[in-house]
Structure formats: structure tokens, C-alpha cells
Length: 399
Image (tube, rainbow, N blue to C red):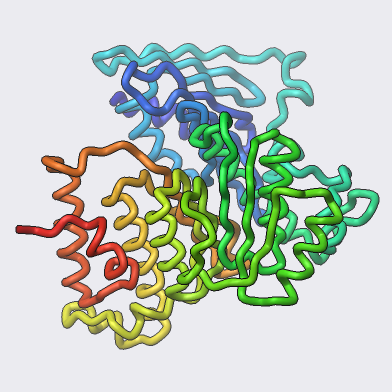
């Protein structure tokens, strides 16, 4: 790719930068369009990227250096047109099949550089919120997040942002849900159920999906309180049940499984049950991953593992990476995403898995993934619970 393109873009990624659109992908590209805008996040000037893939939008934040690296990849392999706006100019870049660039720069007149051309730096603009401040939502009022006027209680603002962030993940998977029949959704470890109520309200009340949601938790009083709230709102398809993740047998088929902050191996049992039910969608935020911390062992990595805090964090990240890889191997398109900022909680990883159609026989790519997984597992000396649960039924054995 012509390095002059990156240089021109880089020189204009300054305080005057407004936005940029990358478009014109090849016919086989899964990315349709990419939008980039500047944001101020915790007083830092960064770039928010929105990738449009089919009917879904995926959001991520980058520093300038990280963005330039991604731009190099996108323009090399995907997008052949760039429209970039600053407060003083508009830059259009067209890239030919041979990689040659035609660059056109249009300078704005002084009359053009008006307020409407100024960059919008707010990271939390109103339109990114699915549940909007100023619009009273009954369950948010009763759960102490919102006043009766619709204002967010200051001490609960992080919770409000967390709820909206979770609904963005739900919004992304809507195309994978069948709207022609009643869908069963189970939320394991639902707790006070902020997110369970939010999910029901969004899918059932706002989107009109025919759903049945079951919240499951071990705390009897919490279950009683949540059932009372569901009854009060007339949410007749939302039920809360006292029960354990591993032993729950109340349904035969589940379309979507949500597990938020299920502690340690409870997450593994929830993922296992989701696979048994052949769930189309899994959303999981793991918590307290202690299991591998006591197992992980490798002579080469001893300089890392001698520090308890480092070992604990490596073990926790390894746990989630191995979980995601297993789900991918057995037939899910799996991503690990940031749930909310680390500032709010250390439990900020979300595993999102969507069922995909793959051939489980004579599939070299699948075999390579399985071999890589086994090599890594043996290298680290670990036997994850999810691996043991899935081994007899879903993971093909080497002959």
C-alpha cells in the first residue's frame, strides 16, 4: 500500500479531525463500512471505530498509533475508498486494484468552518444509549438506578452505563435470533437482575420479540424480590427460579444463554449447559477464575509465575481464552470483548459466542485448531473444567 496515504491521514488526525469513513470493500469482504471519530475518554484524545459487518456494528477504541496500524490493514485488504473530514478540509482517497491512490483535497472556505463541522468529542452521546436518560423505565426506578423523573442517580451512573453496554451486545446478536417463534433465554446467576430486566424490556417491550426469560440464582430472597417486580410490571414471560447452574433441568431447549459473573467454574457449567442445549447465542462475563491458578505450571514460564499477582492474572486470562477457543472448536463464532471499563470493575471481559455451521468431519482447519488447543493446554499443564465437561461429547479425539 502507498505509505503516502497513511502519512496524509496521520497528519490530519489532530484536534481538527471530525470523522472518517472507509468504504468500497471487495465483494467477499465481511466488513461493509468503517466509521471513525475522535472521542475524549477520561481526558484522553482517542478514536472510536465502528465496524459495520452485515447487519451488525462492532465498536472499539484506539490510540492514534493503534488506529494507524489498523488503517494499514483495512486499506491493504478491505477498503478502497476513504472520506476524511477536518474543520479545514475534506480528503478523498480512491485506491485502485493495483494499490495506486488518487488523492483529492478540498479546502473549506471560512464560511464552511462553522459549528456544525466541529468534532463531537463526547464518548457517551445520547444516541449510543439504548435506554435513555430522561425517559423513566419502571425497573430502573425500582432497582434504584433512576428517579421517577427519569434522571440517573449519580451513584448508579456506572450501573446505567453497564446496562446500556450490555444491551449493545444484545443488539448485535439480534440477527441471529428467530423472530417467528417463542425464544427461551436463560440467565444463570442473575443476582439482583439489573441486566435480566433490561434484556427482557429491550427484546420484549421495545423490539417485540416473542421471548420467555428465566433468571436462575441461589439466593432465595433475591429470587422472591425479582419475581415480585416482574409481576408488578406485567412481565408475564419473565420468571425467576432458585437453583444451581450445574443441576438445572427445567427446559429441553434454550436459544440464548446469559451468564454474568458466575463464580469460578460455575461459568464452565453454564457454558456446558448452553452447548448441551445447542443455544444459538451465549453471552458470558466470567468471574473469579481461580481454577487454573493452582494448575498452571511450566518451567519456561517460572520467571512469570513466581510473582503471585502476575500468575493470578495470567491464569485468569488463560482461563477465558481457553474457554473461547473451545467454543470456537465445537461450532461457535467466538469473540472476547471488553464489557465495561476496568475503572468500574475488574470483571470486564465478555465472551460472546454465536452458533455457526461447520463440518465436523474432514475439516483441516478444525483439526488444526484442536491440535493448537491441545498443545497449549499441555504446555501450560492445565485441565480446564469446560474441557473435561466437553471432552466426551463434543471434542473429537485423535486416533
